Image 1 (tube, rainbow, N blue to C red):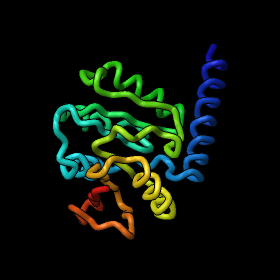
Image 2 (image 1 turned 90 degrees about the horizontal axis):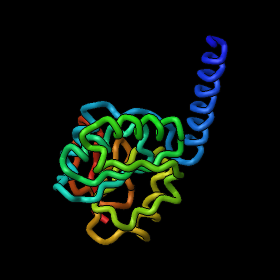
Image 3 (image 1 turned 120 degrees about the vertical axis):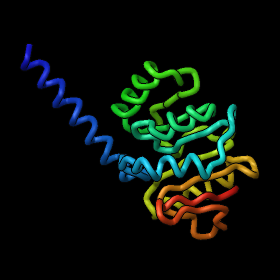
Length: 170
């Protein structure tokens, strides 16, 4: 019985690391945002109850929970199925379970057209490609909140340089 447990644990870890590497290639490996950065992202987004928030590369779901705490409908897209299961499990047992949804999907195929706010923490060399996706799929006025990296050709609307958080408007 213990042997089966350890084999399953090893398979789970192998799966996690496989998708961690895949995420690095597609745009952003799982690097948890610092608590202060996450809180700053939500604060600078100026969320209101009922807003539609989308986290591209939602990782462990921490931004989804913070957004839901503000009354927003939070949707996450994550390429790592282990993190998706983890977030779903946490959401199921939270008071925000009706406000949080997370999908196992590559962010480049995510349906974001209804978003009022987008959260993103991608690698710098993927930001220009993401800017093209956002401009073509989002409605004008949508807020985009970035952790650490900016869109070089976009005007910064608000920022907290101490926490490396930047806000843009499409």
